[in-house]
Amino acid sequence: MNMLHHQIFEIEEAALAQHPRIAVLLPCYNEALAIRAVIARFQAALPDAEIYVFDNNSSDGSGAIAREAGAIVRRETRQGKGFVVRRMFADIDADIYLMCDADETYEAEAAPAMVRKLLDEGLDMVVGSRADAACGAYRPAHKFGNWMLSSLVRSTFGRGFNDMLSGYRVFSRRFVKSFPVMAQGFEIETELTIHALQLEMPTAEVPTKFAERPAGSVSKLSTVSDGLRILATISVLLRMERPFQFFGLIALALAAASLGLGLPVVADFLETGLVLRLPTAVLAAAAMILASLSLCCALILDTVTRGRKEAKRLRYLALPGPIERRRTHRPAAPHRGLPLR
Image (cartoon, rainbow, N blue to C red; front, top):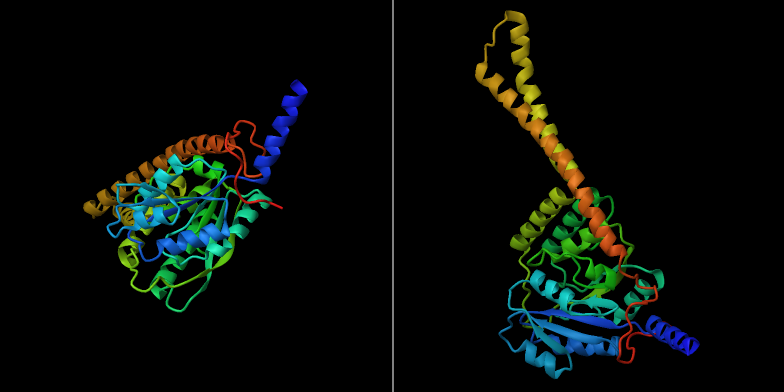
């Protein structure tokens, strides 16, 4: 009997490894003109995947259209893509998660290749980079902002992605369940990227086509305001994840200012025995005190950050990878997903 149970167990494991459960997650806010086509394209690309549409207070009937098209529709009343992603990652249970904007600009047909790459190479995130953009699809200001922010993240964290702000990504289960979502709006892509870089997860990029939005459909992204929010997010994450560099640079700048102000005062004192510029001397001393405090903050917060990183890393490692056999989870329903062979 024990041998029979062991054989059944091995068969179930093999089935789950060959047919992982795939969840397609589509954040949606007033995408009535595109949502039906997006669902149909993902149904054709990943016929065994479950498609979830999270309606973020749409007023154009997007949720009803998505339900008619065969998607599982859920609502998130807090406005903002970050809130939607937080709800998605918390509520949906799957082996592989594919997240894509519901505006019909991303190439759904690239999904099988992205999923296979994640599985075959044991990755935790695959980004669909917008390498082949249709004329007018990728506004120059957005392209420049993406390049600037991607370069900033790459220089800060040592590596990065060519298209850091892509809304088309495939995740492993351990990425999703170890990701502490904090963002509220479009800065969520930045947070996803930095989470992967901070924990040094195995990741990759796959070039995909990027099309124009359907006629009459309006982008919800504001170049200036959302760009500033993303930049602010990078600054906050830099302070949180690289406190020694952040506060160390502040300390260095204050120390340099103190020396620049204080050296002439010291020279006058050595020559005359008098402090001829008392306000300058006080300012130089205050700047050096602030520099010392900033350096102390850098050292303390760096230790705290290392502890946080270790805790996040342990949580990440506690979950099975995309190509590991899952010995603690065997769904009762038949296995569904994308065959690997």
